[in-house]
Length: 434
Ligand code: GLY
Ligand code: MN
Ligand code: MN
Image (tube, rainbow, N blue to C red; front, side, top):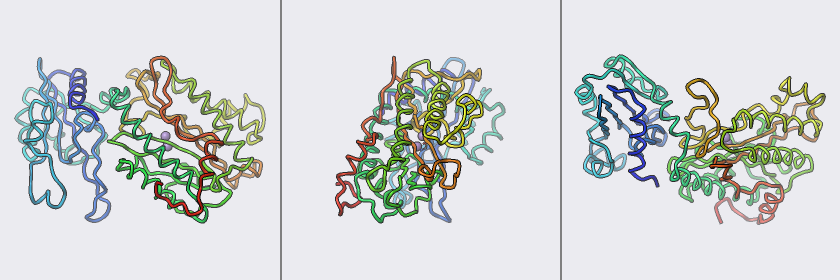
């Protein structure tokens, strides 16, 4: 849980970064239409949530910074019996005044009028350019002249996680662990990818995570070679591997975990060879993590290790130096080694500072480490035994004062750990948590 005092502190920290005589307006997320008159489940905008912890739509956070003082105002929707009958309770003005440590709580229906009254002597307006809100944008354009982007200022704060944020990430990972372990332990014979997906989603929700942090990937065999495979609708084939990239969101905080496991419960020799090479690489990269290291150092080292591994397995051929120069690994390892993670799975936090210099690792950052190798079933340049195999191993790591904390280290990962869990398969095991 994140206390109101922490949200208040965040708003104060942000206010210090703002120009004098400015107004900052942050919008809650819009409801998003799924089709015709049905919506997707509502999910608050992460920047808005980071500064308020408030989950209702049609609300606005305003920070007024004058010459000397700062005033913080939250606009929210009024109580409305009819609306609430259909859509659920709203917090309302009275309770909001008690809960939020802001200077003023006002009603959203008065937003436009109040903003005009509040914004005399204002030179600058900050807002979140990433939100796609045509109406709000038009309103701002019509009423204010000099616009500044607030997102990078919030992004640099979001880069460093507080203790309470880390606890929520840890909780998300704990729930994700249960879902992955269950996926490893159930009998997958004659099942489909979507049945495994259903088990994962069931275990997220059963353990208190209302949503996934991103659309899960459950990809059997060659499907794992499509990086953003989300159709998840093919049969599980007995001697193939399944790449499962699935992480829940717990109280708005993400986890991002990939495990690659055998349908039958046992890895073949070729699968083991490739898997262990990627696993070794992942361990070595994780061990490099500490303050002042650059993500590009991790990336380069991963490319070196994977190129060496691919050479030793006969997947790449030729001279190591030339292969590196030609970036030949890109055919089999085309993505990055990892990314920031937090309120968003790809956290909206900067990779470069204002001088366009890469931001080095620092205590409190959370990132993923996710090497993978993807070999198409049609790749005739590769020994036959490796064709149609896609493997990624992904974990979540916290940077500490001197090194790192391996947040997801309890999720089975070695071949022995995965096969041991798979041994517990009972012929009648169902997809629910036991
Ligand atoms: N699940 C998204 C990613 O691994 O980056
Ligand atoms: Mn990831
Ligand atoms: Mn992932």
